[in-house]
Length: 344
Image (cartoon, rainbow, N blue to C red; front, side, top):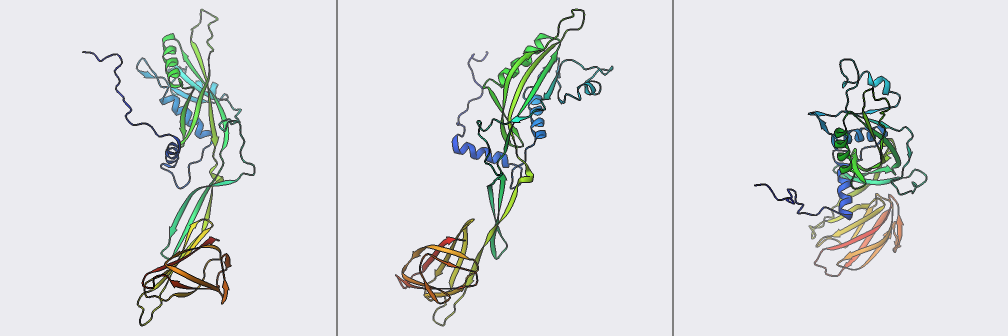
């Protein structure tokens, strides 16, 4: 018994990602099997991906043989017809076959909807990597330039002696481009490939000669160039972790001082006063900073001094200066936290 006419074998039970989640998915695909930086994109990478797309996605079999497709330059056409591996014993080309020629006049890209790049060749933060050497927290900021858009035009020609072979490829092309464009991934970067036009270049003037059809598909790739030589790796300011013990006969607890870099130019210095620990602390700072805010936990009041001089928020302190902090706890039996935040 046959299946119903409208029977479907593939049911998509889970909707695809859209919006912000889709953008994250694309970024993850770009980073897949790469280093902390994305792979660069050049003209040869786009040429290679277009050829792979035509060879794999537009592949057709005629008389149990896959129709070969090859990227050619205008200058190499005559030479290639006598040397390629799909020729017969007389070095003549076997029909059918597909030729791919990229026009050499690469145009200013239109993938940015007619907008231009920011002048000055700036680089933008791409990813931050934190490091730890056992004593200091450090990091690296990976930066990339804004990609340079470029439009590349490809002329795909199908040579065949039979109309039914031509119809077979034409049907495959129309199905692949039924949404006006088809995305291909160049080194993981998605780029739209558009079918511009379909033309016929068949020459059937002399009825005594062998007839063959030539169908031309003009495709435009809205791509971009991402030059790896313009990638930059910028070291981040190291954050410091210091632990100071204050020992007294009656106080077995310690006072911790932790300095942590939150963002590239932001810093937070946290003083944790444990139970039974002293309510004042002196420290020679290792990072210059301008402190603007304070976060208090179990602190009723406080005072600060830099090199013996009283200060209030905001204040600036430089490397080597002495910072003194004294607090009065709200609950004398509980731990207190005094945290300064600012910029470096």
